[in-house]
Image (cartoon, rainbow, N blue to C red; front, side, top):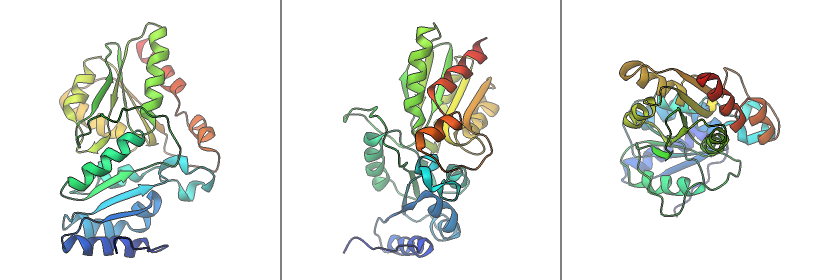
Length: 263
């Protein structure tokens, strides 16, 4: 009575979820990210965001981590699409703990929410007592030389990069931005005090985390920055870890960018 299967009918899925919301329910509409933001975009825009209905979109298999399915199924632009929609809140968890807490927070939040989940199993970063708040980023490591602002699965890579940099006497701050919209401007401005910022996302550099951070810095505190992400390209078929390396989305790539900024 609480589960409805609408396979290969993503537009109907979003319309039905909108209908449930008008009746006071809290629907979670779940499908691959590429279908939630691509095939069903018009329904998300006009039937959910425009009337600001209380629908939660649980988008799975996001980004390159869908792997061998290839470019047609790899949503490397979904965050940009969802960020552009008025009334939409956009969340990209870093691990399983944060994902569970984000789902609970989304259920309690009034309004449309886009939750991005990857396919790749990632290492656990947070303890079960971790406190999650929509719109509030987290400083995971303090630093003074460079700030690495990451989202989603790139948070783990950012922490690895910070450990490598510390051995080379570069003190890196690591910030987890789980909510891309509304973005935490206060924590970005705090990161800017390092004098150099690197953003890291498993998403195109156009319209995602890098763009969101750059928008804040351009208006509030211009700061040198580098964006680690997919450089205006489609994905391709391959094992997730191979693709992350191919598209320069590893801890080593973050380390390289940090060294270049500090040289």
